Length: 203
Ligand code: FES
Image 1 (cartoon, rainbow, N blue to C red):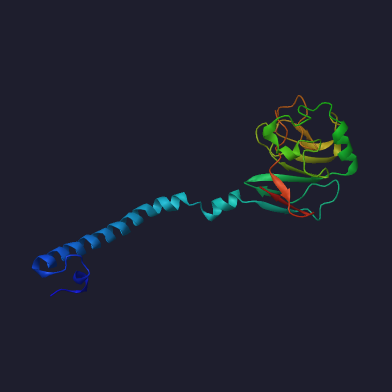
Image 2 (cartoon, helix red, strand yellow):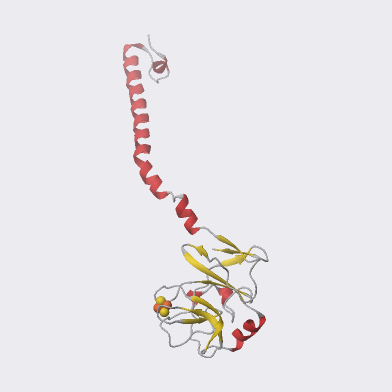
């Protein structure tokens, strides 16, 4: 006589059949326990491979509402993307025009360095729309955060821009670095797109 597990086994007849069936049952049970153990052992690695919510958030796209930004202003408070400050400036028409012609004294006026901006920002404004400039607010010298200079003119460019207080680097209102300062490159332009007229998605 045999129980339900034995009945389901492949060799289920007679004394020898019962022995084989018990062996079959034990093999199946052992395999199941081993499988559970393998999953348990792998769990820390699976957890390790799966990015945490915090890590996902750190690389996530960021939306910036610029509906309240007026010409001549930089967005405040400054929004962070991937731990980096993002500068958003609203340029008036006079600045837009000057960025096209006032290129004397700039180290890379044509954004020739391909690492510093996406293709769409290779233009005099280094931006998708001439009036709105979007830049990573980190000096390309040693990583300080430059200050927005709205009203003070830089003698090199004849306009405002960004001034780095650490070692004196200057960038114009398109984030283009002036010649002869420690910073070697223009400010970085992050990848971004317009979700609407007044909302920019960074990343
Ligand atoms: S970190 Fe900006 S000039 Fe040195």
